[in-house]
Image 1: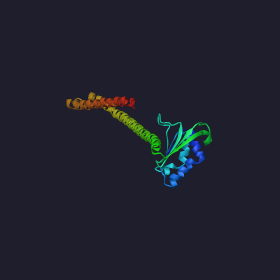
Image 2: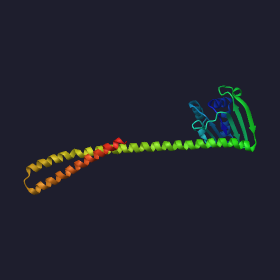
Image 3: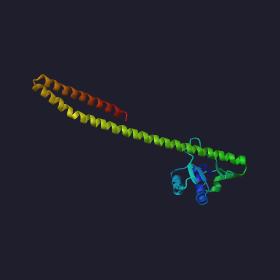
Image 4: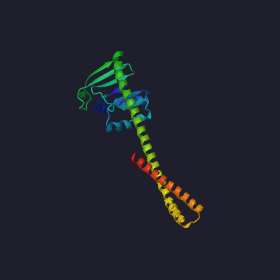
Length: 221
């Protein structure tokens, strides 16, 4: 377990070949390696080029700056086999040279000391997992919301087209009914034309209502 406090700390470890050696240990010697580090676009590209996703259960690198209040800015911390720890003090993060940037280093195989560093690392690691879960949940919710919006839009468009298509034949029916009503003389035929006219008007009102509902729904999409 390696905890890096700053972006420059990552660059210094990379120049020393530490990141490469950890990758070789993970992929070649079947060792589980977990790294927490602040990142930027360049570091994310470097991590991607490491090919950590070939065997993510053996080599896993996660950013810690994304966790509110979880950044670490004082020491580089290493825990090996849950039995040994090494804490390296940072004194001047602007220096490229590892020795110039760091101060004292404290090695320990004392169980209480190792467990304290282990607890810090595991706490930050769990926070990254929670953050990633929340991020994935939010992504799924956003996707679902977009799907709902698209479905509503398509539904309203269909209703709008259907209502307009429904209105198209209604007006000729009403007009022809009026023409027939003026020409017929028998009461029975007159009543049949009235039935046609009444039902056509009902369809007309229904189409208008559907269009009104579609307009209201489109305002909320």
